[in-house]
Length: 167
Image 1 (tube, rainbow, N blue to C red):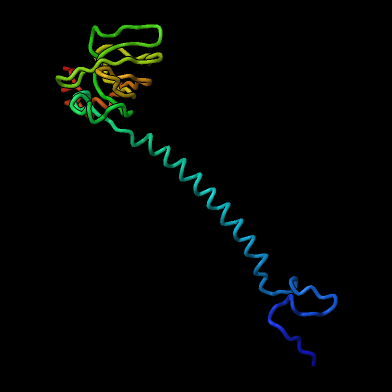
Image 2: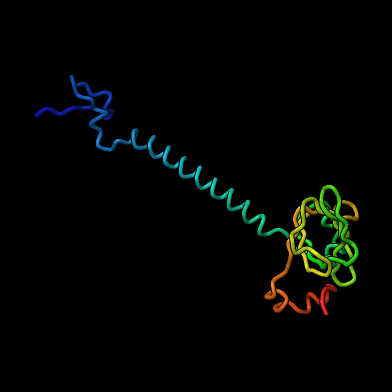
């Protein structure tokens, strides 16, 4: 019986036999393949995590009433957030880039400069949420959302009254 001596398959000398190919563990070949698979999986997980973070970032954007925003103006600085209020009658002025108006919630009034075309239902005494940031005393906005749903008014009747937009 012939016994092949040696612990390293590369040190074995038998003519015509590729010991690396006959290695039953396949450790080198399998480890390279495993590293590639793990790298690809990590890449996709990181990409999915990034998209999830960006999506949640928009959903978690801060929401303040005009009264809260005025009280927190210094703290908010130029960070983007959502501002809720009711459009003050007599303040809507259309300009070349959009519309200027004011929103009110309780006793606080905030002037808004909107860049873009307002929604079709935009008018005085309508509850709105504007997205933007403070630039000095003015709120610069690039999006107006109208709270026109009867479900909202039915669910929050006092909120609309407190804002000054209903009877």
